Length: 368
Image 1 (cartoon, rainbow, N blue to C red):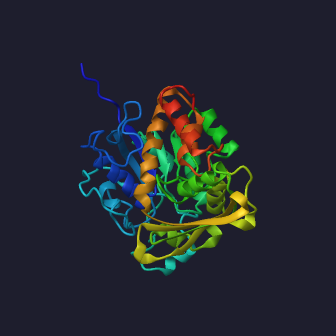
Image 2: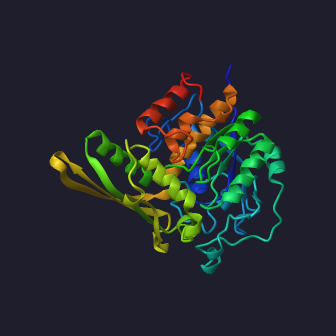
Image 3: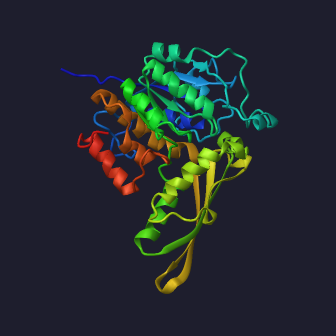
């Protein structure tokens, strides 16, 4: 007798570049085997492969996406990420109009339509009702940086609908005790906050800072500057929306040091918006310290990555770990996967420790 695994049904909040890369990846790996599947941290998690994920609901506010089916929306402007999987099966799931709230920064109106958000005049749907009717087991939050009110709205909608929440944005939900307790009391899991990339600015910066620490080098000053040309970088030109983003990225690096650096000696954050870079992100790192004999040394590094596929490689594991938690009846913040792939989990661990925690969780040797 053949048993067919149930699909992992997800809703996506924000059909931007990150959602596009995730959905492309689901179909890209469909005809792959473990041997030739490049770019995955886990080919299978328990019995779930990437192609076992199904998008059953989507929310956005851009008129070029609202009302379109998912397969069309992910290739609509202003999306500009690399298309590595053109063949996306036709979907009957249409993108629903979500509430705008603080999801669109005022300055975004000053740019050409092909670079920015164009808000639809459609009436927002009842998000809780759509989630319930779709059969979604979890929602993945890809809202723009600074969407504090909107993220809290969707987190509450998930609670009301009994849907798990994977918070990929720097609004502190999973790492907030009050919010985490709400999900625990509801009997549903939550993962967050603020997704790391597979090999991105934060994980690379953490690795180098940890290396200084391990090798007895005193780290004295460091910076991380990033440029990009997607809507994320355009959105972040409004520095008032960056408080939680800067806190999340800075805390992720400071956490691997025995003694945190003085705030004046660490600068981590976006630098500028360069339209022609599109979804390519350039990161410039510098670390200054003193080694044996109090002799000065420094490292400078330039990292170039396609931003959205880089994060999708982590989100695809978060989804499958969340499904495991649902199957096992685990509720509240999932500390293992949150520590491994998020910049601002409730509890920070070194990347090696977090990786082992994830393996222990997958194998059933760690509760969460």
